[in-house]
Length: 335
Image (cartoon, rainbow, N blue to C red):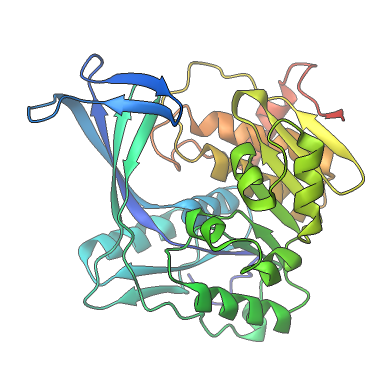
């Protein structure tokens, strides 16, 4: 894409290829224990699978960047790939989906991230192995400065890179920030990343992550909000799986139901990314929190009807069509 393209949202995070290995029904079992659900497959034998579906150019930041592009925004991505065929395929896939890839850095001699997802029935277990790149925040010309940054999952041992991001944000106070912390960012802790939390306009977490980051009580949504707002975010969104989502601006708090599924979910990868990026898009377009809460679950619903995080993402017209046909109960309620 030409560097003359206006950037509304600059997403920052790792990107990768996902290979979805569809296990045949009956070839595995799912059990519950105190640590959650466990996928069990026979050990030391051959396990049948149905087929494999490969999706290039995904990962939290890439998923968001594609969602934003499909909603009609100027979307760019800061990410790293290796100097291999997987990296070239990732860049091509992102470009074909409307993402500006001028800040995707190719690392010669390094491999690109390639993950394997064991897809069983309507959910998946992902085998991950993040490559460690020499992370550098790119030079961004004044004419390239975005309206928003969307920061999400980056590999571990990148504290200094996060400091560089915080420095750039301090130098560009007009840029607004959406932050969906990934695993390393949560492990680093809110104190270590306090500059980023303080700069955040919208913070996105699921309920369990909200406890990890803010230390609030899992069963008390208001306590979760209170603890997270103390860190600095102006708006906090907390998703809660089948129970919908919540949002707070520090004064008003809302609960939003999920959009009704037209069919049972096929595969759940990317639902959270679709929610958060669509909520941000609505706010960027000048909508209220209540309106953003009506937008976001629609893209999540659509994504889980397809395989992978990208195929089900909606255009703005498609999203508005679902919104127009929503049941009367599909609206936020004040807490």
